[in-house]
Length: 393
Image 1 (cartoon, rainbow, N blue to C red):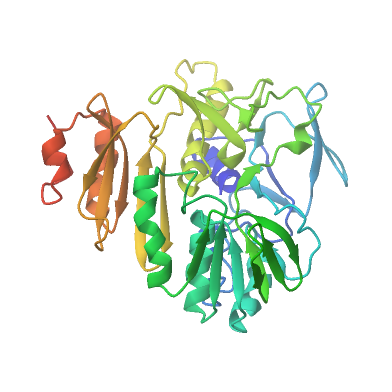
Image 2: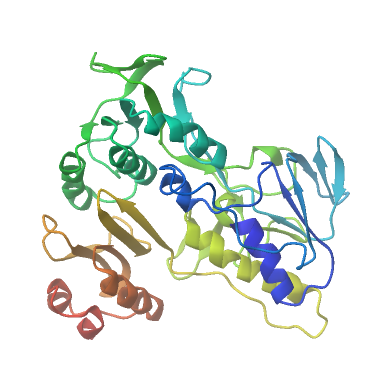
C-alpha cells in the first residue's frame, strides 16, 4: 500500500519525471487486509490494486529484491544489478517474527503475504485442527477465519491475556471471552517450548496436536538490508524519519510499516503498523518530494496523524483511533460484556485515544475530537447514550 500510494500520489501532485516501483514479490501490487479474510476463505482469488500503472507512467519491476543502499553513489544494489535514483522512497514494510525453532518445520505457517494466504487456504478448506500462536490482532483475525471454515482452533498466548501488547488488562480481559463464544480455545500464560510437524509442546508440559500451526507473534520493520548504510534506525529497527518523513540521508524518504516518525501531538516517536498509516503517509512524502524540486515552494507537509486501525474478529468490528499511554485516564462507555461498548483515554481531560467495539459513530466522532484536542466532560463521556461530540466541554 505505501509504495503504490506514494507512486500514485506523486503523479497527482504533478511529478513529471520517471517513477520506478520495485517489489520483491512477483505478484502485481496488492492490498493486505483481504488476505486474512476473503482471500484466506476462498471468497476472492486476490486483492490486486485497481491501478493502471501504465497509464500513469509508473514502471513496475517485480520479483526484484534490494540488498543494499549506496547513498553516496545514489543507487540500490539488487541481484539483477544496480538501480540508480534521484529520489528514493523506502516502503519495505514489516516482516513477521518467526517462532523460534519453527523455521523449516512442515505445517508451520506465517500470514503476511499473498503466497502465505494461498498456502493456508487449502489448510482451512480441509478443516484441519489448527493451533495459532499469538492472540494479537492477526492471531484473532486468523482464528476467526479458521472457525468460519469449520476448523477446530486453539490459540496459545504467552501473556496472561489477548492483545497484551496493545491494550491494558482491564480492556483486553473481556475480549478473552470472545474466543469461547466463537468456539475457539484460548490458552494464556504459557510459552511454546518446541514445535514439530505434529504440533506444539508448551512450557507447562501440555502437548497440542495440530494439522497446522499458524504463527502471529508480531512483526518488525523490514530494514536489515540497510545495514552499513547511512540511514539512521531507531532502537526498534524502524527507519528514524523526521516530521516530513525524510531519513537521515538527503533525498531518501521512508513511509509505512518500516518507518517511525515524531509526533508533536503525542510527544513521542510512533511506529504504526496499520493500513491507514500506509495510506496517509504517502501524501506527505509526495508533497515534500515535489515541493523540494519546486523553486518557489516554501511550505512543507508535516506528518502527524491521529493513527487509526480496525479489526474484524469473532463477529465484532473493532476500531481504534489515537495513541494512549499507561498514564492516561481510562473512561468506559457501555458494558464490555455487551455487544457494543467503547473506551476513551483522556490526558489532562483531552481525548487522546478511543477504542470502539460495534460503535462506529463513537469512532467517527472521537477521531475528529482527538484531532481538535477536545476536552471531554468525564461524566457525560461515560454515558453511552450521550453522543461523544455532546460530551465536549
